[in-house]
Length: 463
Image 1 (cartoon, rainbow, N blue to C red):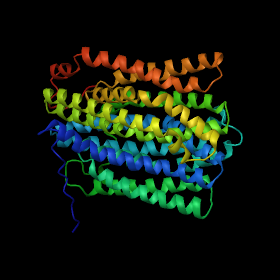
Image 2 (cartoon, helix red, strand yellow):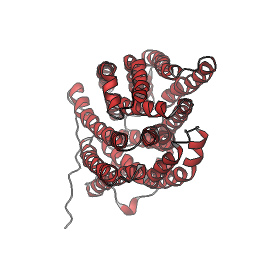
Image 3 (tube, rainbow, N blue to C red):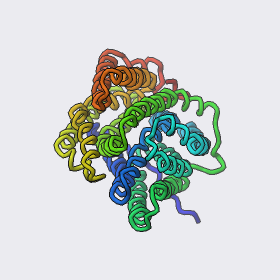
Image 4 (cartoon, rainbow, N blue to C red):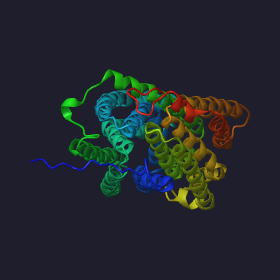
């Protein structure tokens, strides 16, 4: 007889202390993101210490291109999380099940599409980005191996998103811990032990992500009711997919266009040399740790707002948003101060070349004191997505983090051929987005507009 796993999710997001509920939910997200960042950083650290700096440049600059290609579908998957969380808050189990199975079907189709697009288009995109000739061959190899296994990455995101949407942020954490340990051990074996090069670093990442995806999907298959996945029920339900698209498309467009903007930024960095690419790429891995409190509270707020709006608890939404934003901003700025102080040391962990350390340190010390602006923008964006107002962060971030950022860099680089132009673009655009988000958050009646539409127990949720 098949053993069934209890599916009762935590109720702390819907009742009890707001602060305790958000922290209880966000802390596993924080740890999960920490381990995910650790195994993303492991490739860079191990490659940087065992292989030449050209290999480090090939691996460390991977984030922007991967985000551009993967971000669109991940954004749509985030829309599914909003739909699932609201049906869960409204206790509509039938609609919840249909939303879950539609999301899994989307994960399978989207993962297949990402594999084909990533493998086929990577060489052309890297060439178009002006990747230095001494870095290009290994960059192509790394990216193609990564995208051969991107199905696992996307399926894990889908599965973890379903569990998190109903309040279970612990099990995705456990699976990330397992995959992180596997990735680090395989990196040390493949790169440090066998000397197989950057392709093996990508392979280690793919294998470890496949393990986390299998564990996550296994749990979904074993749950009782609520969000249990049954193979025979996996298919697209038109009404549910329509809702997922309406909620997720703005975030998907936002992610892909911001990813495109960051690829444009990387193109400007590539105009310098391999030292700049390696130094800035190493800094991007350090900056990934800054995103830990940003991401966990932004995701936590989106789920918190979705569930409590679905349950009609508007005052609880107000309290939760204020608390979550304050926590994220405070923690992020504290990490920024530490990075400013210890930048040469942490960049040096990736590579001891003085030029590489200099580029990474300059970028860190240009941006570190302004991290609180980035945290504020992401948290308000999470609140808006949880409230079904996904078009607001899409418009603000497209305008500030894409149009303004790219225009500023392209114009300023014509006058000043200095990489500092690229570095200052980030604090400038974080400030602009924070101003727009603050105005909207304080002035717009986004909570009561939900109440007036009578969607406390929705049969169909509108964005």
